[in-house]
Image (cartoon, helix red, strand yellow):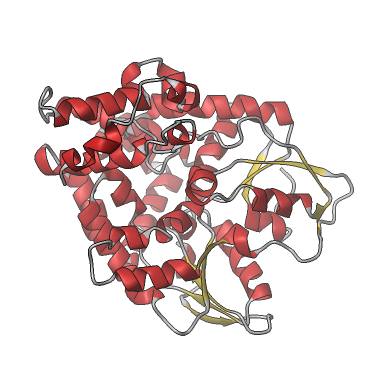
Length: 418
């Protein structure tokens, strides 16, 4: 990777400062290094030889959430998040690739069985209090600068992963003809299993058959870190599974996975697998694109439930999916929908962002919680498991009674009361 190849794009930044208004990190810190024009100035200095690659670049390169809000407010639409990500790739090549990420991306995420075994071990430690003891002793710092504090974001873990409870395979549905391949994201598989169960139920209603896939991680965590090689390996393993005539459409209930799977052709842009990636991307749908009810879904409650919606960045800016989830919620009897201010403002989750930037992550989350309070919502609905984890933590920290849930759970009529 050579960031110099993108000099013309970087130079399009006219330093107007409109990115400051939209950037969650800048609004939290006020530091120029934490906003798009500051990051682009940094990249330009590297290309022009005024700055050398070194470890001091890690913070300004990696404290970007990658939410894309800056580009949405940029007149020349400079793709800052993408450019920063490319710079991260060069940083890993020239400065440092940490062993913990190598272990995660090379030896754990590509193999579902290994991930499940690790998840079961983590669940045991979390649910028995062993991890709290390890945190108190400072033993968790090896996993990241802020891991010991970020560990508390997840309250508890299911003892078994989703695909250990419900085995991969073909399940009969009640639809007429549509054959669905269900891509299970890591968040649903390991943590948000209730969302997965609701999604599987809905897909069975829609499809003639549902194939619960034995896919591995989509590759987004590795790609966001700048590890393109690991991301391509993960994507390649999934291409072999997804390129099948056994299903007509591929669906995932993780908007982050959906957004990245649709970009697989970009991962293989100079590769002989690009055509295969394009075929799969053309069949890929986010859950919110498929479950729009033809008739109103009725929730049996005596009093209306107030619901609001949080837009995952990979759904709103990544896929342009903003109308669909709102129409779904407004079309459910028994729900009063209220729009949340700054609904598309990043929640600060950004995958594993809090592991190295806990304080920044919480400042961004606090802003989201203040906007949630204005809605007085019973339900905070979203379509990304990573967002669900972060938002649930915010609700607990702020002492709110709001229930955070996946849109599949609402449409399936599950857990509609906080």
